[in-house]
Amino acid sequence: MNKLIEYLGWAAAAVILLVALPVQAVLWVVTRPFDRNLVVPGKFLRFVGVMLGRCYPPWKFRLEGTWPAQGGPFVVVANHQSLIDIVLLSRLPREMKWVIKEELVRIPWIGQMLRLTGDIAVRRGDPESGGEAVARAKAYLERGMNVMIFPEGTRSRDARLLPFKKGAFRLAIETGVAVLPVVVSGTAKGFQKGGTTVGPCDAVARLLPPVPTRGLTQADAGALRDRVRAAYVATLPPEQVAPAPAEPPEVA
Image (cartoon, rainbow, N blue to C red; front, side):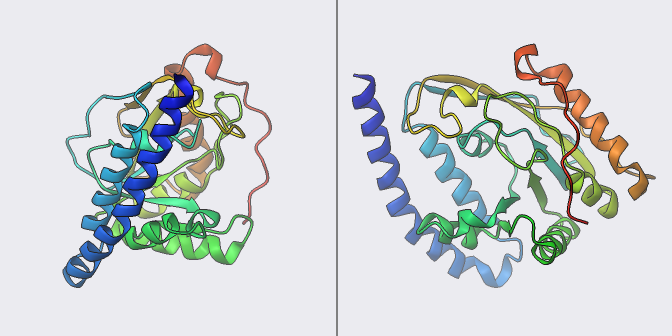
């Protein structure tokens, strides 16, 4: 029975994606002349993400906390346990542009949807691509649009928290916007990294209070990163918190 539910879920997801791209393309064409931030096609894709999350009933998703009263824009950061973090975080109540690895926009059909949404693709290890991604992120923030980044840089293989890179925090300091932490827990059980099957999960995304950056300089990026990561350590279950190894090398 579990396998049957899984197969039906994959089939439903395929139908949703098949229908979604043409609809999103129409929305893009109609709204693009007056929607510089691509809010309408972006919100539509997040709606698609929510619908995908409902294709497999044993997945249970919920949000805790509320969007800050000051509204934003924010550099939103979230830990990354699973591919289905995307469908969980699609439930957040505001549109945001995600910084994603370039490989995703090369996926047929899905990649085109990401382009229509205006998400920010970056080629990992390529300084030029990284610089272009930062410039696009800054432009969005200056126009009042939130930017979403996974500061670990990749999914965790065992759901435990990985070290955070500084990029998201440098961006927040440079643009003077607050960092909004979102703590993800429980998604790894639904679809593990390197796995091919889904499983039941009870996943939650918890919004923490925003962390201001006013008055900070780039010299404070490491301390800001550590402060935000400490909030994750204090919020996640102990088994999902790994001792922080040495920070991986970063591209200047």
